[in-house]
Length: 170
Image: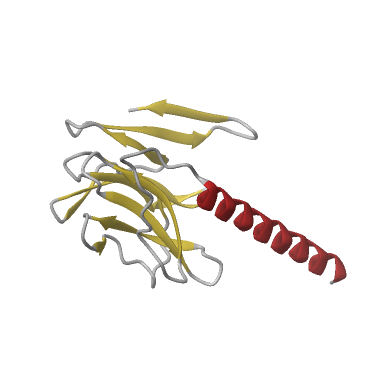
């Protein structure tokens, strides 16, 4: 029990030091003329992995759950935050969002068949309020990026044995 407490205390100390360093970097950052720093979210949730397009639209993830073990995808259109996925009850994992200048978003969701570590990741696309599933297989598909023309590239990844993995790019 003491060892666990020490590890938690060390982790908490590291997290506080890291947060202080980030805050210092934020406060001391030199912003070039014509640019600014704008805080888009301010709540007790953990938001991360933002991607921005040339129109100022941002896609990001918001974690929730007792251990931040699930998350949802959000889209900031320049005026408001739009929740694209709503999975608090189902604990579905969303990862790797990207956005192009048309506001089309790609990402991966853990909604495929059960793999060695739970449901496999499938590539999703959000456009004009509609969500489309681009892949449907029994291996992980990690959304990579979307071009200005709407072309999507991703990794098709699967375990090929002990300490061995295979991946392809689509």
